[in-house]
Image (tube, rainbow, N blue to C red; front, side, top):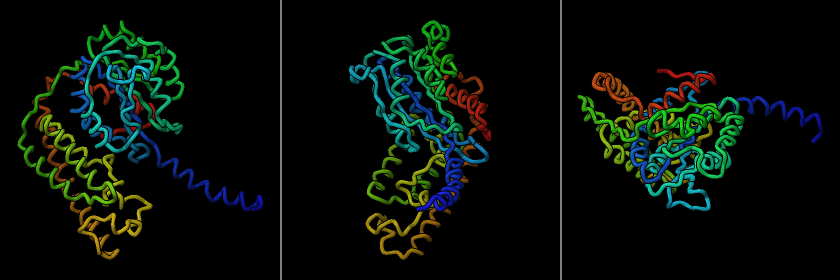
Length: 368
C-alpha cells in the first residue's frame, strides 16, 4: 500500500476513533474492604448498601450521556488469605456486571486480622485495568479499622503514585474520627487527593414499611419475566439474578426495593445473557445468535418473529420499569420523613458524597 492510501485510511479511521473515545467515559470504583474478624458490620453494610450507591451513580452524566460504571472488589486483612500475597485477594476485577459484585459481596467471610493498607492499594494499582482516558473518574475506596501504616509497603508512596496517575484514594475509617486521624487514615486520603471519612460500621437501618412495598416486590418479579436468557450461560445468569434478589430481600425489604429501582437504571445491563439488553447494542445481530443459543420459546422462529418477540419483551420491561420508578419516588418521599433523624455516618453515604464531589471536579454532573 502506498503512502497516499495509508494517509487516506488514517483519515477515514480517525473520526471513528474519536467517536469511540467519546463514548467511553467511565466511573471506575475499586472497593477495598477489610475482612478481618472485627469487620462483620462493614461487610453487612456493603451488602445492604450496594444498590443505594448504584442507584445514585446511575444519575451521573457526562456531556448528557450516562457513563459506564465499573466496580472492582478487593478484600484484605483476612488470615485465611495467602500470607505470601500479604493477606490480600482480588475478588473481582473491574466489571459492569452488578449482580456479580453483589454475589461476591455475599460470599465474603471475616477472619483473623493482618491489615496492610499500603500493599493492597499498590496491588490495585498494578492489577486493575485503569486505562488512561483522562475524562474517566477513577477512585479507590479503602475501608478498615487498623493503623493505615502497617506492613512493609509505604502507604505514602503508593497513595502519591495513585494520585499522580489520576486515581483518587479515599479512606474510610471504621471507628472514631480522631482515631482515624491518629492512625494515618486521613494522611493517606490527603496524599491520595481524596476524602477521609469515618463510619460506624455497626449501624443497621431498620426497615420502614410503606404502602408501596408489596406492589414493588411484585413488580420486581414481573420485571424478571422480561429477561430473555440466551447463550451457554444464560440460564445460569438468570438464576444468579434471582439469587441476588433473594439475598437483598433476606437483608430486608428496603434493600430489595433499592435493588429493584437500580435494576431500572441505565447502568444495570446484562447484554452478555439477556437478548433485550443485547439488542440495544449498536452491533447486535439476531442472526449471529445460533439456534442452540436461543431459549426454547424462540427456537424455530423466523428472524422477524425473533425480533418481534424481543421488542414485545422490551415494551413490557419499559412499562414495568416506569411503574417501579413512579412508586419508588412515592416510597422515598414517604420514608424520608421517617428517616430524618437517621445517622449519616454509614458506608453508602460516605461513598456517594465523595463520588459526587470528585465527579464534579471532572465535569460529571448528577441529575438529583
